[in-house]
Image 1 (spheres, one colour):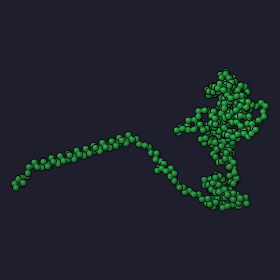
Image 2 (spheres, rainbow, N blue to C red):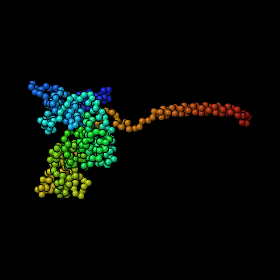
Image 3 (cartoon, rainbow, N blue to C red):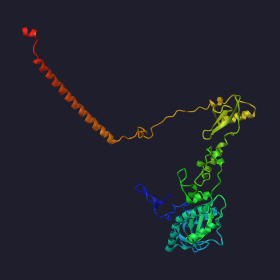
Image 4 (cartoon, rainbow, N blue to C red):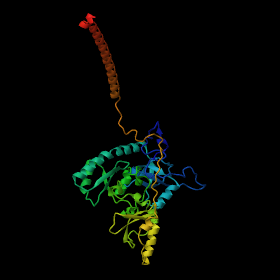
Length: 418
């Protein structure tokens, strides 16, 4: 998620450096686009005097603008708290706040409604930023204190109040935890008021955020607000392998996205017979082994011949079941399976537009070795040439010596007599 000022430049992301306080408010989690911002109210209509204010990690509250301050998205305001005041950022104003409050069942006419005091001054912002900088080192110490006391809990986040008078510790735990001794340690170490708040594992993931296995930001931290229960039957209907490592999200629970397409699968399964129903044939009883919802096919195997599967369509399986209800049996499944012909021809095209996709598989040879080999070959060639020349010169010298020796030899007696 990014706003107009978080654009990239020279191929590298720069960012607006506003740390979630930009004017468009599109860098924040669970943000609402104000599509009524450029529209003026009709004559005689007063603007809605409630404002949505965001705090750390997407926590949002609704405050009454009793002072009729001129507020816009991105303004830092000081709001009412149980003790002291808190600092937050305005994320929504106008009629859309009424819609959000109605959606979350928050009544407008409340006598004890929390109010907005003023726009935050520079002193308020400095105290707020100083308190925010203390949160990370405090979280490390708090976790160590919980480990030393052997408490079965995990401190996931710490949020300071805007005036630095109170720190809220968010933790997760499987069972109830007695943290009375831990609060004493925190108060003695951190010198501030302590509030412990337990959250669920899904709420923890939504507060901290992260990336899912799909490569996108977590749904619970970007747009999902209601956490519906997810059961393993959702995975069974979609014919997914019941592998807890793949079906669980970062919160450790089943992924919320298992419910997204569940209704579509349930509608498609209405056209399929139940997998528990067996097919009665003259050859034997067939049991369903696999179902392909997208192709509309089902695989059956005879009892005792579990390795041989026969593929038929869902309509054919329903037809056989209707005949079995009439106490009739078909000859065999092979008659129906022969009607389902698969097209196994595959034609591949070079969509990449290159010669070979495996051209980089062979390791690259070292250029130095090539040059050394070339130099060695040249030197060897010169050496062989020189040796050849020397050998030819030596042979010529030997021939000349032989000729001279033949001339110097004395003639035989017969030749002399003649």
